[in-house]
Figure 1 (cartoon, rainbow, N blue to C red):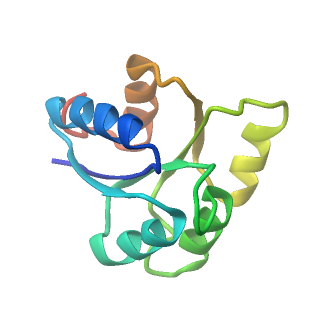
Figure 2 (cartoon, one colour):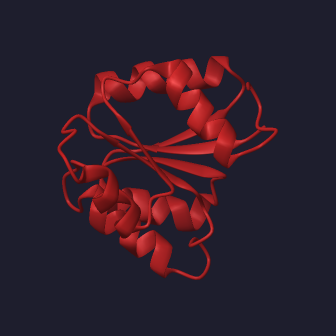
Figure 3 (cartoon, rainbow, N blue to C red):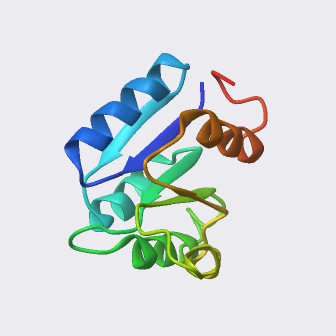
Length: 125
């Protein structure tokens, strides 16, 4: 069973997405801000991180940079999630270290395809 770290400050988004991922066989750990996301990436060693980019304490861009700069966590794939789909955001996410990018509201089928591409053979896919 693949473990996903969901870094999302919006409780409703966190609850909805985590329940949908759990139903598809994933283990889900959650963080509510970028600082907690960096800590949980280091302590929990998830197989993949879903990173909201607009976060309190430490935004998703900086949290991603810190995760990718750490030898212990740099190999964890990260999918950026953002409601602010502006021109250049995908490129900005990739430059920060994200492996992929998706927009909110989340379209689960599309997100599961992206997770599957980064975690071949992952539970639920």
